[in-house]
Length: 242
Image (cartoon, rainbow, N blue to C red; front, side, top):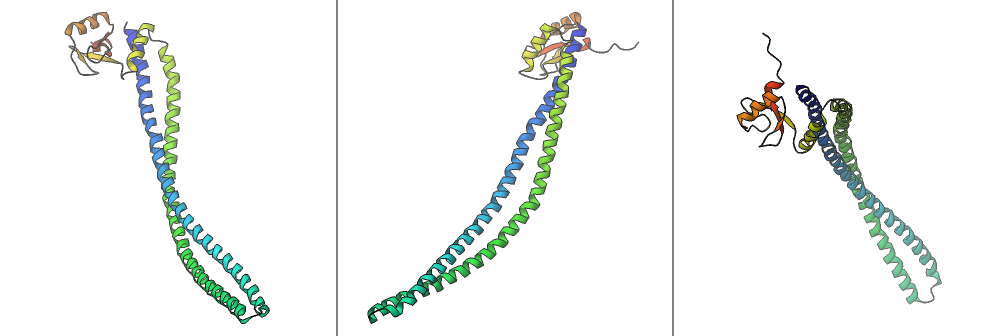
């Protein structure tokens, strides 16, 4: 029976290692996701500044196009001045030309102001972009490190899966079923009872008779407090040299 316990202890050792690796590995995706979120937020800030610059440039181009069209229109009107048959018609067209030219002046001032704003905004984009490039280096390095650790942990788990398969072959089938049921709820699933009968899993004391029986039979029982599989600690202790 001692051999059965030793086989399950060996298996549980592998399972504990796997559980620890998976617990650590489970934290990596969350950390990676948070760093990627920070990176996305920083990138969005740069994009927002670029969008402001693009909007200013579009407004300027639109006004420049409008001014060009207005100049063409005024040129046509000026060509028609000499064609007017009456002073009234001449004055009306001349007034329209004057209004259009004043409008061109106003739009010209707006174009100049938009150009000034675009220059300021272009510098803001440059600074924001430089800050993003500088800050993202650290974030990208951390992400790469975490991904490497995640890959390392996953590789270790795969390696241990092979060890587990080998260790499981030496475990008694009935004991294995009990162990699998318990380990889904808590780990370690099997723990020793320290004399005279304290569960090393939950710390609760069990009847001394249970410990005595387990010493005699070298078998297993169930802790009434935590439902773990228990065995007498001294059963697996190495014999003391005489």
